[in-house]
Image 1 (tube, rainbow, N blue to C red):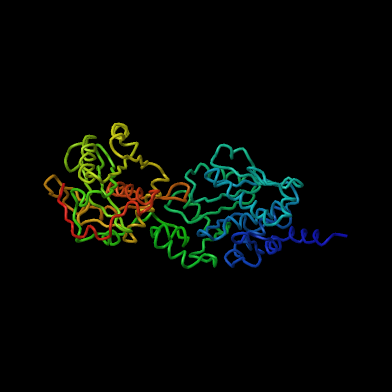
Image 2 (cartoon, one colour):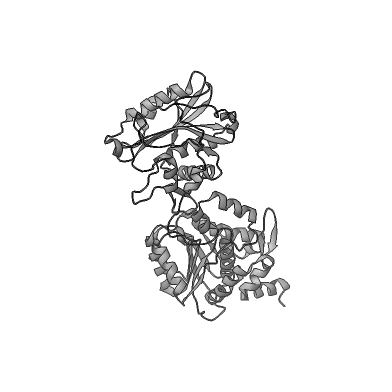
Length: 497
């Protein structure tokens, strides 16, 4: 006679829903809850269509109407957890040996789903007695059912014949060769294909797959709009909306596909940082203050920008911004300009008791850094670094939209030594910030600001300012170490350099 535990296991193996309803899942720090008590309608909708396909794979049901699934959800909507639960049921319940692969852009991403499956097992101590959780696969030793986790290696996919394929974080894939090999691998066995993703950007191969899935009767297509998960707080969403670029917020949280990367900040947001009473400074108003001076250098085509900032209370003040434009002057910008600028800034702003911390790009100005780092305080900032550019973009945008940056009218204008503006149209820090767009990295988790590819915008001033601001924001000594008395600048008006 079968025990109660054996009967319960059989019931769960026969029905993915029974399995889910009785499964314990992590629910916050040190707590677990029964999944059937917390599952939401948007989850049940996908489960109801996916279950027949998984039962067919497991040998416990007829061939379903749909075997291709596009499941697109906003961040925090249990996409990975739900997939981990369904795939755990499949491996646990398959009557025979089946093989599946989970493919992602990189190895770390591919193993996130495996980690979530192990977290589910940790909340249900009986599961590790049934399944084996290895470094790059999960398997059922009794039946041979297995799921392997693979990263971006299209060649290795051409020779395998899986029964089911999971394309994880599909909208962040940068290589259509990976998609071509994954899709053709699924078709060899005419099995089951599951695409898991957030909303993406642009009109590349991923968009074409999405549009086909949305229109084809062979596919289950799910891309609900907006925040549906009750565990995501309204306060958290309000903060995300305030701090992320509008298109990035729409993509990540509202689950809306974007035509382009979108704008970094608006012109109104940038102009709100202009202090009409401020003036460009030619040196420090008080000997003893600390400044950060950053440089973005280009010899011929792009502009060279030198930027000096300091912190005043909880705000960062742009004291001066010098811009050299080879197109306007018809001359290349020599490295000597950079070194003379550093010398003048250090003398005028450092004074006798103050200090200037220079931030330079190691790639652009390595020889200058090596020659002068014994004479000046120099920080090497890697402008080409994905993580550095992401942190810089986050800091700069947050400072702008929260009005914690301040600069003088006309900051960043291109002028000659006499102060005559060299551009026939408005071209300053405000217009540059408003012209920038947001571009996501292939991983999808991070982004950077950039100029438009049509040649109508530049990003040199933003990079110089962003590097200086990030140096202040991330300084280990904290804001207090750098700050001067609030309002100390109010009565000071400096002259042009």
